[in-house]
Amino acid sequence: MNVETILIITALSVSFYMAWNIGANDVANAMGTSVGSGALTLKQAILVAAVMEFAGAFLVGSHVTDTVRKGIVDPSLFSDNPNCYIYGMLAALMAAGTWLNFASYRGWPVSTTHSIVGSVLGFGIISGGSSSIHWDKVSQIAASWVISPLLSGTISFLIFCLLRKVIFYSATPVKSAKRLTPFLVFFVLGILTLVLVFKGLKNLHLDLSLTHALILASLVGLSGALISIPLVNKINESQRQHGGSELIDPKVKRSMKKVTMHLRKAKDSVTGELSDEIANLLTKTEKISDRFGKFFETKHISKEYQTVEKIFVYLQILSACFVAFAHGANDVANAIGPLAGVLSTIKSGIVGVKAEVPILVLLLGGIGIIVGLATWGWRVIATIGNQITELTPTRGFSAEFGAAITIVLASKLALPVSTTHTLVGAVLGVGMARGFTSLNLRTIRDILISWVITIPAGALLTAVFYYVIKTLFSL
Image 1 (tube, rainbow, N blue to C red):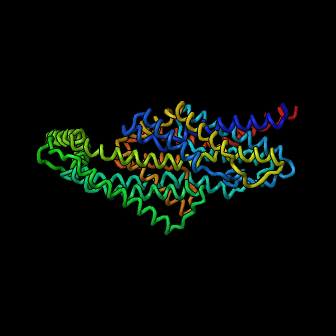
Image 2 (cartoon, rainbow, N blue to C red):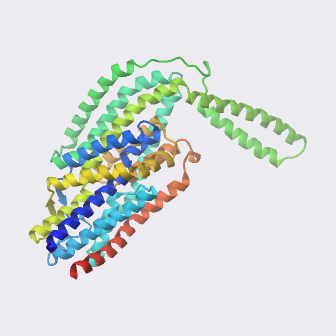
Image 3 (cartoon, helix red, strand yellow):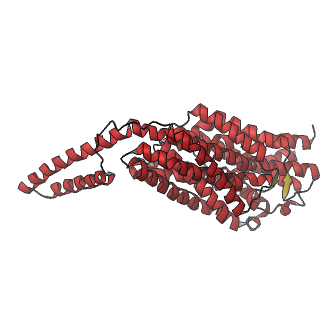
């Protein structure tokens, strides 16, 4: 077996390994909230994601890709030494795959794009020095650590607060949800169509102008809204079974909590007769607060509440399918981009800026993503869906929809956002709408640390793998 054959087999193997890790880690972006909210079981989520991710990767995955992801390093640096480029790309794929493998094992949702960018960055530094790196590109990517979660978190926070005010705080939640659903369907389908246009269909050279994209999105949204009207009208509006005609503004509940807290402080700061009077007042206040707590707890397990959540189950599954499709179309390039560059260089002996992607390579990437999702995807799905904050279909929908809006805005404003960071930020935003106490700060801390470590970890691992590969092929 000659050296070229060994290099091709090695490149195919490590690319499949990278695709496997993309499936194991990144697919949680699309399905984590659906599983966490109970809209889909883990098996259903894996099945739906497998179909949509593979369809996105194989049908509209890029057929021409950058040989070095995101323009971090200039490929012309390796024009006199193509073997150096081949070894470097293999090392970058191994390093990114290894870091993703470790992150998935720990259940950390990290950006696969940042993993491969960090790995290519390490290869660029050891082969051409720090001056060969386009640091402006690296700075843009690092900025996404802040931009992505902040933007998506704010949008999701506002969406959930709006739904809570319009639906759950109304006297007739089901009627309010039915009235709002056609408008939500319009915006959801419209925004998700824009996600597909900007993140996925561009690979089919369907580079629509903003005006045409908006017209297409409006037509899709309007069609969905019209279809949804007779469907939601079939839903029965059960009568309020708990609480009678009692309707309490949630602000009153929050105010009573504050009153209780201040009375406790006041009681501790005085003595004598005044302390006894405050103690009596505190006892009465605590009883009223307890009544409010039972009222809201009862309301949340009522038939009306469950009916509203069922409506949002369908909206959430719909949004998850769209995001999975767009993710497969866009992120498969992280695995096959370097592979296509390596295969092209082995075949021609020239390092190019772009490389054609053979159909079999796309197929390899799509299969790798599915296998990774089916075997280890549950680890990161569990983190997104259950360990950041408690999710319901309404909250999961708010997070997913907020993330989709962020991706569309970022695509048009050329902001560097990560799909992973965007989804995690959206879940955080929904959790914060219910207060900091609803967030698992320990999990959030681990996730933030993993984001910061991703790029340097990829760079360091690449240096190790590069010298190992170079030594082995020099023997």
